[in-house]
Amino acid sequence: MTDVRSVLRARAVSTFSSKGLRPAQEDYLLNDRDKGIFVVADGFGGPVSGLAAAQTACESVRSFLFKEAGDLEATLPFELRNYFSLAGNVLFNSIIHANRKVMAFNQGKSIHEKGGASVLAGFIDGHLLAIANVGVCSAKILRKERWVDLVKSRSYGQLYDPFALECKDDFRVPLIALGMSEHLEPEIFEYRLEPSDWLLLNTDGIKTEDLEKILEIKKSQINIDQSIQEIMKLLNNSNHLDNASISIVIL
Image 1 (cartoon, rainbow, N blue to C red):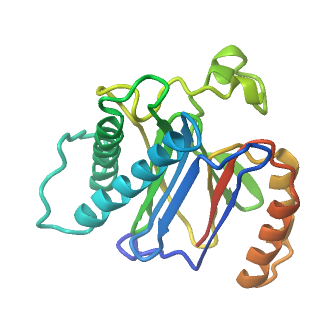
Image 2: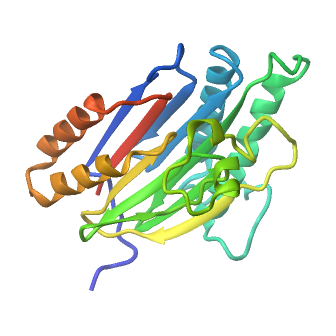
């Protein structure tokens, strides 16, 4: 029987980023493999403000988690929810903290100068994965030859047509985002991880055919380095119409 107190660490982490057919990149991502922190942000507001908002969001989440995570003497989170684990509560408050930072960045700017960002943050604590989601980013887990969505996109497209498998670019407008309101309630999801799980955290939806090809890569049972190389080759050859930033985590 697996010891639930043991620590599950990522065996490999890789990232992919492309501006696609857009004139500039407004996405941002960062990872801290040792701390189990993975953040992606889909910025909007233009090539300057959008990227700055996304970067501010990611760095604020990481700095908050880096300070609080795993520290038994750390100050308690600003808000506590008794239905979340400690990891989930710390992650919840990291998003609140990041939103304040993006709001401060926007302070005094006109509506055309402000930036915002959809953000998805993952925090691995032992065998527990806590995910915070705000906006249109997505997270998936691949286990036993099956993909499962871990969060629900909060976009106009999902509101307009909840049966659509892939949201049209014009409808990928977030209904909630960092930097738009002082009152923000991030969605928190918590899952138990297993060794050999593959995680994808990304700003834009990965095509169904790409997911099928990644599944085939895993089923081929090649080593981790070769798997990452094949996934990077696949993503580089895929047609990205919009900005895309993706973190791949192999456990």
